[in-house]
Amino acid sequence: MPIDRKLLEILRCPATKQQVFPLTKQQLTAINQSIAAGDLVHVDGSAIDSPLEEGLVTENKNRVYRIEQDIPVMLEDESILTDQVEGF
Image 1 (tube, rainbow, N blue to C red):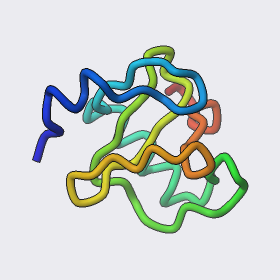
Image 2: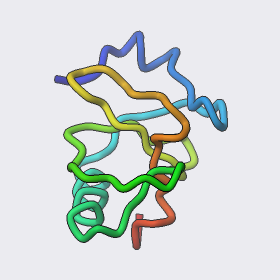
Image 3: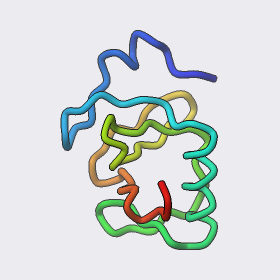
């Protein structure tokens, strides 16, 4: 289910204060392939053990936040830095 547009307008990255946008299918696929390969960790260094169903990416495309059961998880320590994903 797509995230509510009004909520999306007010959400900001807690680390950079940038606006966030839904991941494209291509971005989501690239992240999930890296998760499956065991190549990604959260900002706090913890392993990512399950694929993302949906996610939000910052305006500069450097950080991703997962969406679980239609709820954005906007925790800086649990975000994913996209420099870990080749070609993101």
